[in-house]
Image (tube, rainbow, N blue to C red; front, side):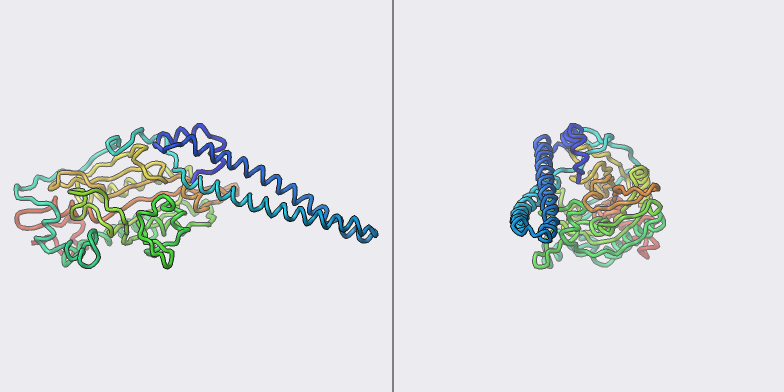
Length: 424
């Protein structure tokens, strides 16, 4: 979340940034936060004064008793008791104001970086660069959901029977392809210096608040209410929370971690072709890369992460493009985001397969994720993450773009992982 210091010292810039992100009532909520904090400061001063007076009087009671001034000592005890009651009232009021400030701060999204373009929606995103060759398919080419059925790779109907729509069952070479991609992505991350983590697939509410899924996205997560645990929407959540309430030292940064996980998301998007087959699921597999870094180095880390993801789609021989998201299309917590899309030749549309983001100090402030710099001063870290990669739409594009009249070709880089180079 944004710090109070940032909001108080840069009110106009904060409001301008929130308006760029098309956050409703930006001026109003910032004014409310500043007013609540002013009230908190006033109450804190009153409480400090009362406690100081109470302590001073309490110390005088012994001396008064020794001097034989019993009546004055009793008056002092009475005054101390009154101060004690006043301090209880002020402490309760202070707690309410502190909670009120925090609740308001949690409702405020991150500010967009200056390099983020203006815009309200995906139509305003900027194409940074493109790569790869779009395949020319034969006239009998079909989308991946038909290929999955024809080659018995993925059973969507069986998933509906077992769990519901959005929970496909991968079979035979379809399951092998999933495992091959996961292992390929993890190996590539490890070779790039990322420490592999195997995280829990559920997190507590504190972890959700730490990375910003709560209170913004509670409706999008599966909630195990009996235990108050949430199924993770991405490995970003448990992996980044490794650093919650941690103070690192500068030489430990950047910390680079990667993790495979299943991901669970309640929201299913729109209807029609956008959600056919693997286009949008409630459960899917993904490899995530996470970095914790210093503010001075985090944008170099961001560029390295973008190049890492670009290298993956290039090795998979998929046509791709990289988008710099406009302010209105970014997530609640992001300061800057680059989306990767691959082209689906059979569907004739671009499919998002990764988002790489720098959250600057926004998540770190929630997490209390800090580091000591060379001078020994404690500062907030910057946090970054990216999908490297999400599997469903990668699989969709691989099946569609590599289909032939006789079967489906497997990209060369995956053959050692699959154990086959063709699905006949």
